[in-house]
Image (cartoon, rainbow over all chains, first blue to last red; front, side):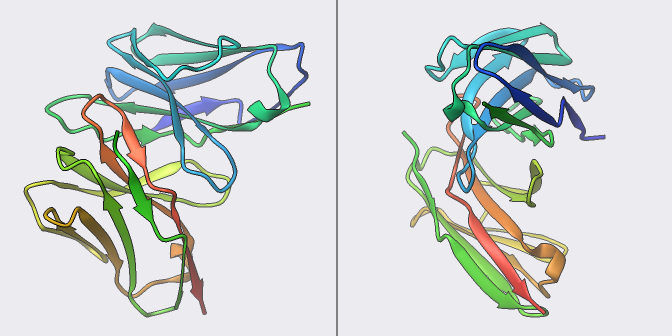
Length: 114
Length: 110
């Protein structure tokens, strides 16, 4: 099973709302990732968690707040977003072992900020 | 940092072979990957190749790697309409991050 599950699939929020994106995997992977993908563009890395600790933050604005409560779960808390934050948010996980970084992706959450 | 480039669009007829090309800049990338993205979906891992290999075949997919020229290609044999999608190549930066190319949109005409 190589499944990464993301919820919700779609989210519409206003600029003053607080919402969270959720990601779950049960493959025993110890690295988890958040990517942002704008239309017709490749995914851009936002955050990497390794063994439940934040290891990479690609200078993401503080209105995005990641959280890794345990090795199977990854959240992305959203607050005071801007319309330009509308995008597909992808979660991925990998075993992070031996130099091989095969990342398995979820289907994404399509976020619209009004 | 790593830079990965791909051509943007490829159109083929059903039953033909498709060849999608990719170049990268960081010769220390140990693994290179191909992902497929259908409209409205996440990324599906298709295949990957270790940098000390020059070819890998997996059913209809053949990956060729020219490490000297930092050139990677994905060949899809007997291309079907279900292969229509965006194909991303990605290189391992060595810091648990992948750098993706801009994606090649493959259009398969019946």
